[in-house]
Length: 314
Image 1 (tube, one colour):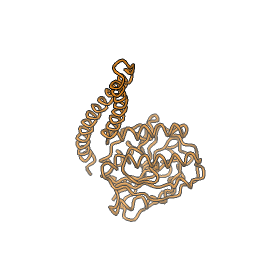
Image 2: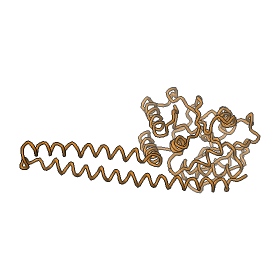
Image 3: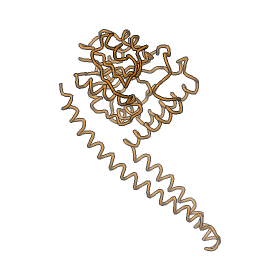
Image 4: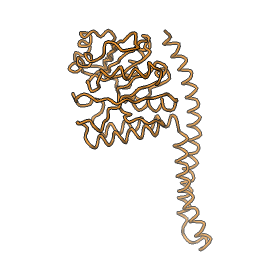
């Protein structure tokens, strides 16, 4: 069994040595352990530092492409080189690399398709109370969208089996973390969580400008992924809401028309109800179309899965 440990990096020459030195040299049940550095347009000596520490596998971007693209390119490289398991960690040394063996073990023992580290965010000292609250809320939203029960959905310290990576498709440009959980949940993959203790903070996050930027980006990624898998739920809810908003004023107009005659002056209720009824019908139509698109996407993904099996054939 071959395991690739991939490290997305953006100007990590200061922290990368600590990451590389803490990666285990061997893992029980693993025959080959490889380290892959994805340089996402670094302007410092990140690649030179990686080479100096014995890293053979390097993927380079000429400019910054983002975390999701770095993850996708790293996975593509690892699968082409025969990876059975891909572990993702960060170049800022926030994750305890000595726990990589614990991430890999459930996959090696065929007890899981994906293993995600639980950072136990409520215990992280440099997280503000507001950030801790948003981490909990975000995880609950992802769990609702994915039908999972994970304590730390935003954790980037995780391991994927080869079969899971072939079945997953990253379409977002921001972060793969939420999207892969939602896809895996709806594809009935087994996801396991293990608690870890993170290292001391080394720098500010480069993935987002502030917590509100992170919330907006993550929210849009979650909504997009949810619409991909359950569009009928969203549009059925909208249709029911608009239907109620249409029914109430129309009933009001009808009652007043019966009681006081057609000249009572409540035609505005009828107009509002008609507008809401049109919105309800549009929601139903959009729901039907989106469900047809979902069916078409499933067929395309099945074809893409077969293509990947051929592309990454050992």
